[in-house]
Image 1: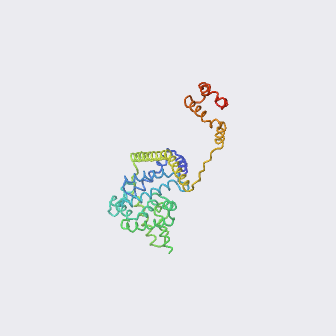
Image 2 (image 1 turned 180 degrees about the horizontal axis):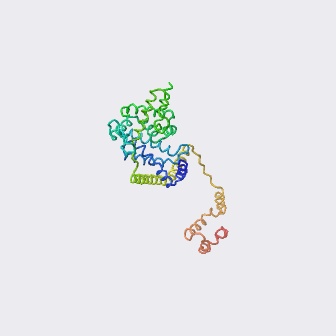
Image 3 (image 1 turned 45 degrees about the vertical axis):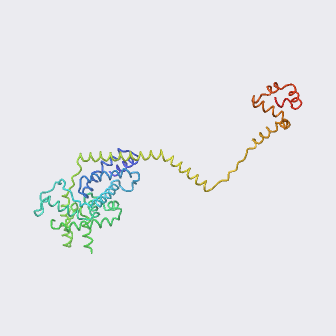
Length: 179
Length: 181
């Protein structure tokens, strides 16, 4: 996958628009998921995804293959999303999406309805500081390694682990009564 | 201390705990067992919050809109490049001229005018071809000048033809005919 993307990047750097479109198609869903979780605004997330790819298009000539292309995109998307949240001072929320198939017992917790539970989970995650939230989403939902997250943040791996550790501990304490 | 490290390790593994084969029974410390149990439940709960992916329509709109933005960006970049090519060279030439004039002002060069030698030579040659004796004769000078004035150059024959006998004799005595012809 990464190898295929590396070839597409080389073609896109040579000015091949179709290769860049392929890169867009391959990465747009991942970028959208992250940004949507961070902002909670579907329209804003789509705009930010476009901004992310436009920035990537402008700077693809400077992209060096040392990092993976999707890692580079995550970095652009993260910066744009954090800036957006800072500017708009938005309180993001975890969007209520389509439910994954799960056992009925998983949908109810001590009489709390599934939608209510998701609201509570959303509120708990939104209460996290932006960087902890970003690291949490990148690790938990996007399933990136701490090394990749550190690269995206431009920080050390131990900093990324610290952010994640703190985020998990806060979530565990806030959601203790629902576990 | 060892428990702290273990608990920290468990927290860092949130997201992979349900995939792991361990059940928490291997932990000897009850607090660690409790933490493991809570984290597993937390992980399951957090998995419920799925994000609805982009629909086909949203994907199509996103890609189309992105392509429009890229086209606009490329168009702007191309216009800027053409403007640069068109006016950049002129601007560079203008700046070069300003620079040169500034440099010349700062470092003035003394200009000397030299008359080329061949002009002097020709001038002297022309002078040498005119007999000072002819010029000195006031009468001849008057006749020659009036003839040249009236008939222009190459008017020697006319000049000679219009002289009466006395004038012709005087001219023959004073001039060498070849000087006029």
